Amino acid sequence: MQIWDRVVELAAGQHGYVTTHDARSLGIDPNQLRLMAARGRLERTSRGVYRVPVLPRTEHDEFAAAIAWTLGRGVLSHESALVLHDISDVNPARVHLTVPRDNHPRTVGGDLYRLYRRKLPTTDLTEVDGLPVTTVSRTIRDCLATGTDPDQLRLAVHQAGEAGTIRPDMADTLRHEIDRHARKGAR
Image (cartoon, rainbow, N blue to C red; front, top):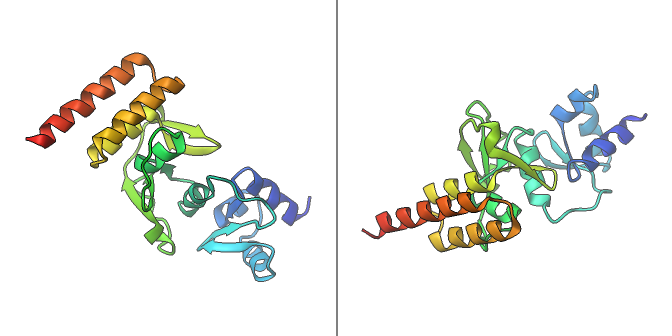
């Protein structure tokens, strides 16, 4: 299989994105990606991150670009996770990502992202449309801790409950936490 075909095949499973880290894992010299970009076959989106322009963009393109920017070590979290789970009307100005403490993504493009550094247990992680994201309950708790409007979080709990992405007992627990937090803030 040709290098180009391997790159396209991998990128197709990653919403059109491929990184130098991905190239290494395929046994491809990362310089090949730079050469493909110089020839117009790839678009360089940030340092070490490329997009295959022949692949169609998806509705989650900006989220896929953010994950690629972290070289695959980040997960969508906080308000961006609310959007990806489709359980709220929030519209964050930047993509929210949680990365391991030792992950220091490239600075190019960093102004597009809001990073949170911590290790997440696997029980707090899931996938939506092939993208790594925090679970609904972890997302709501993270948003509560960072000051997202409680009404948006109540809406998120309601919509997640309606969609069956959280159990009724978890929805009750989250509603209680949101109400308790809102009462503390009103004092």
